[in-house]
Image: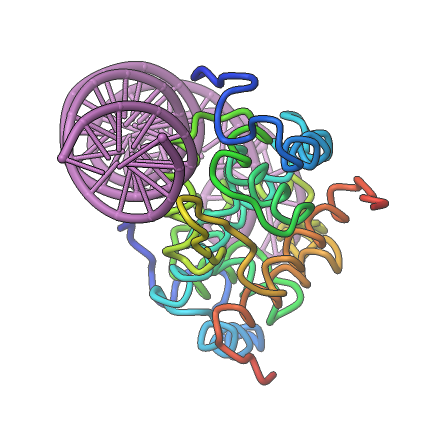
Length: 125
Length: 125
DNA sequence: TCCTCATCTGCGTGGATCTTCAGATAACGT
DNA sequence: ACGTTATCTGAAGATCCACGCAGATGAGGA
């Protein structure tokens, strides 16, 4: 990792210095930031995004339905779902030979909603 | 891109088929999904995450302050900020030779908050 | 004008990640 | 028990992106 000079730079004894120290203390450490970033990164993929919004719409879908809905090979969908499930973004339920997936909790739904609002696409439904 | 058999798979004429067709119609298309995923991916990086949470705490910081707060070389911070600004995640304001950055809007703040809640770290402050 | 400081930009490399193929596993109907 | 269908898994190849260095730009102060 690169070098960061401890007390160099523009914070040279002015009031900013103390304030920055406070901020620095409150910045998430590496492991927490890793967790947070990991969640966002999980959502940061076109394929996964499509699948998640499909689940947001449908509530619950099995692998082959997802495959048909987002036009992606089933094996790929399966791989993707494993990732999402491992991180607690989705839950699954087995019914016979099918496995149904759904969004795990309200937080995930909220993230998807807020993001769509930000992007400007008012989902009326 | 892989092959997806149009009417193959488990949706073979059952009621699911119609429902899946509806879902499929409501799934974001490639460009919209790209935009949505792009926003999430932007947040999906440890360094950027730290910077954004620092801004969430501080409200406004210049490049060198951010550099000190998250312990990252200024050049890297600058590059990162350019990315974030290009996507409308942060705004900036010039004051003399310094450039101050802040989170662009409430949506971004909400995303950060919701994500932190989901992760389970109740930020009391 | 010259010099310093804060910030920005271009480029090359390394590492992580996505994608897909091919085969394995599990569940059901007959 | 057998074959079929749905899902899962492992590995390899290709792609993408973050990172840091080195130099350029812009703004102030003397």
